[in-house]
Length: 347
Image: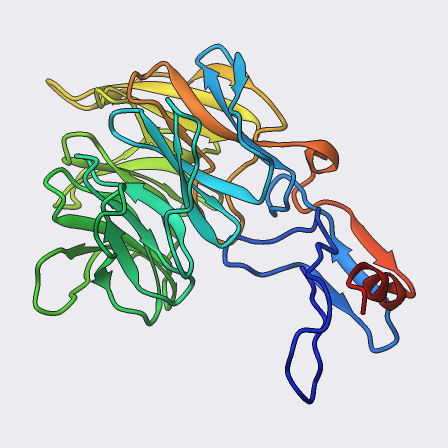
């Protein structure tokens, strides 16, 4: 977006206008563009990972049959079903919206920024982080209360999952000495405390509590590339490998007996057995689709979720020019761009 203003009066002098509608924008808000003093612009077009306004939401069944949702395309990411399946929280640009499946309404939910929505298991609260480096909060989905702080601003902490009982919160922290780590905090303490859960010398993320709260599925690059693992909770003695090859974006089935995950454009599942001992089936390929937007680049955050009925997913579909399948989209160089900018903003 762009809008002209007067440098002396600091007053707006023209109209707001979209100037780069299909540009890559990472999940933290970093826009991939730059320009010189002489008006030469360079930018990355929207691709499979980087963002842009050419994204829509759709439901997909286990065979890959797609039903688009009646929502306008935008800079959409990280959709999450409510526990009853009646609502889908998602991010649209810098704010969170909640789509009502029955009515089709999708009002803005957050105010002042919101990213990475996470439902409580009861559906009584929607948790989210306001922005990179900002506070983590929770709020009833009907908006009947103001947001309550889960942890204060400072550091790159992101709410990732809520355990049964709505008191234990799984948090991903970026930027530490050991990269991306998984921590646990608890609601109701006088001051926020973070306890280390998975803090090894590699990156851990894309984490989710099992429905019974006894396991955490997550993505790690400890083998040199992204793979899926589960760890027992709260102790960390029981790590199990889930994906024999590359894997990202794990999601538990509602009954806790299956983990779904992605390998690029492939959607796969494995069945789990817990008694008398833990075992994992061979992966089953469900379907494959290039236009389903993959995880958010700089956040390790899934761009899909499973419906509580266990029969459908919600996915982010890359549309138009952004559906080429490339990670960041093509690089564009535009000369004399200031002339176009002035024309677009009546400046």
